[in-house]
Amino acid sequence: MHSLHRVLVMLVTALLLLPQELRAHDPDVRGGIFRTHDAGATWTPINPGIFSSGALALAVSPRDPNHLLLATDSGVWRSRNGGRDWDVEAPDILAGPAFTAAFDADGQRALVAGESTVFRSDGDRWRPVRTPAGAAPARALIAGAAPGRVYLAGRSGLYRSDDYGGSWANAGPAKESHPVVGLIAPPGHPDEVHALVAGSVWSSSDGARTWKARAGGAPANGFEAIGLESTIPTRLWAVGAGQMFMSDRLGERWNPVGKPLPETRAVAFVLAVSGAVVLVGTDRGMFRSADGGERWELTKEGLPAHLAARVLVTDSRSPDTIYAGFALTSYEVLQTLVPGGETAFARPDLGLRVGAFGLVVLLALGVIAVVRHLMHKFHVAHLDKDATRSAPRAIDRTRP
Image 1 (tube, rainbow, N blue to C red):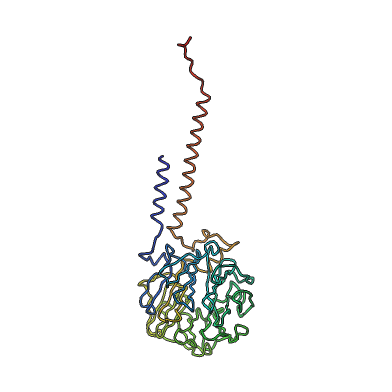
Image 2: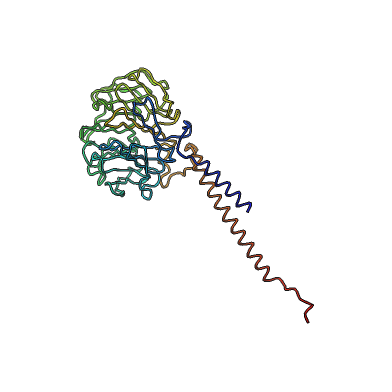
């Protein structure tokens, strides 16, 4: 009984350690998904359930801004009310890390990239679609302005589909040694797409069939991230070595804007621009400027202060509504965990979610202890029974 008591104590302790809804936010150990309605002046966490760490991508339906798909390091979540409530999406199919997600221009169909394939939903169920070699796991899925058009940036290579994942064509300019790390398609321009490859911006005006390098005025060390301005879709933005650049002719000529970020060594992953407000997600957190890059601040209120910000998605109908995602584990690390890759606990840079991991370990230890306790009792009971059967009976000498 003492062993069983200890096991129960261990299990209760594990349950207490398991993180519930995130009331307080520890900026050093937790990520998640956040939303602002005032272009980044204030932020609110909208994490689904006990999910707290790996927000890898977010898709907002172009027809319903309250319809969201969140790709995380442990599956996919769906919200139909702007993030107030979430449901786990097809856990029997979309299991494991989901690297990116996208809605079609019709707002009905959706694509999600898993570890080894891409899944498609036509509004009722998810099913795998055939993807080219080198496409999985995908770095980005971007829907074009034309229905059925989607671009996929894979681990190596860039691909285009005109039937929403039914078939794929190689779209360049990515090469295996230099994958696409940034991909954007301006709304209202069905055949325009821009890709960031090895620090250079490439643009296509014919649906990724031919490409042209946009290097005029670019910094010597190249760009780290590219983005569009929500209020002026023909304006392209980029950041390199902490300096913002802008082009009014979609990359024809780059011009530096504002002052450099206060931490010039910060590596930029994503950026969003809404009027005079500029947001830059980096490996050191989220930087914000309210005056076009003249003054910068590291956003600490309501957001993780020193965690990589890799997701910035603007609501197309409300430019001041922006979603930001933070993850403990990067794409580069997660892609090593696909079949044939390294195991999660062989990587010291993954970071452990103590509550969930501790619960799993303690539950496993608890189950083992209970089984061993029951087996011991069963074994002792059988020994006692066998001893009783084999013991010699006492002779009653009082009977004749």
